[in-house]
Length: 53
Image (cartoon, rainbow, N blue to C red; front, side, top):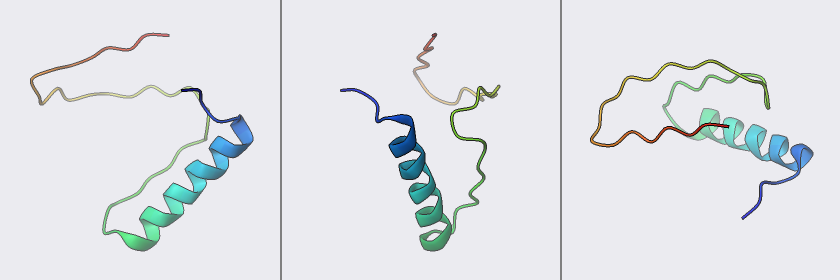
């Protein structure tokens, strides 16, 4: 399986964001598509898988 081209992937990302905002009670926040971001994680499960570039 391969990822979608950037233009299509960004459109799919925006469609998902809009769908969730319009059809759920979730608090939806968004960032810049394709940007490198630092995130934090609270480990709350039996397995943690670390993916590295």
